[in-house]
Length: 410
Image (cartoon, helix red, strand yellow):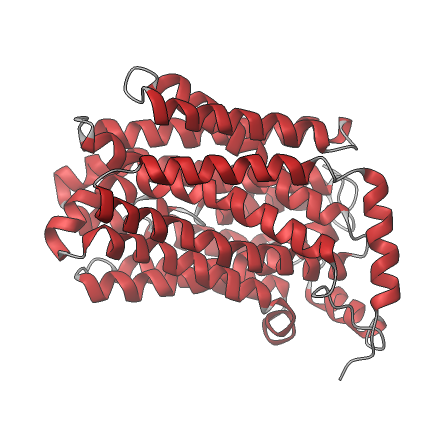
């Protein structure tokens, strides 16, 4: 993978560090789904309350992403990613002791803050250090995210049966600590803080804002609904199948299978996305796959469980990293690209965070999740309409619009 300023061992170690960090960005959320019924029995929070526990870290991811500029100034990219990973480790460890309803909320918030810091700073760092293959690097980073979710989903029920659900939730403390150490070593020679601050200095007289651009909002909504699909199946697919008579372990394996397919698909995307400078074909394809998977859940979810898992895993596995790649495509300069993806991801995560909460409320109201699957299917149809507008020529038009909207800092 094309790197700048690093020799081959250093670049290889940096790739390993990125994967190690990204593996820890979803287990604090993904482990909740297979344990939902146990958490409901232990905390009496109700499905809406469990939905709020899932919502909180995702909402904070969005707030953190919106704060990328002050985060970069205060922490720097390299240090910030390391501190964020350490915060995830601390929040996972705290779940061993703070395992009542309030504790779940507090640790969910702490994990969300750590995840938010990493995800706010990682795109700009990747753009800076992988200039020749940013799409491939983001694909690998996304592969780590969904792989961590798969591992957490697959192991949560078994660990809970043997050691209790609090231990199952706390079990990701070790991997997060290991990732922090690897990152500390690997990121030292990488381009980060100095170049980011120097780049900020060069654009100090023309700070770009994204709020007034329709394309910015379009990409924000696109990322938000697409990520909402990811969060919906991660939070509520296991409880959905448990309610249909499957064991919690089987439901966890279904979610693990889905996220494992997501990881493989994201990895394939990293290898092949450079062959698709026009991203509309892959975008529409993955959205149709997600729509077909939701149709399986709405019609015959038990007999079509395997097709549903394959369709959803493949579709979301392409959609999540490609949503980030399309946003990065719109801006050339690394720091500005980081700011823009932070805007898109920030607002998108805030939008996506309400999806598991709404699904939980619908489950409390109707004792079913069919309404949640249907609402998401409608959202996916809307994304297909948006995706058809994302032509390469529209990227150029967007860059010209940003140039006209540059304003001096206040």
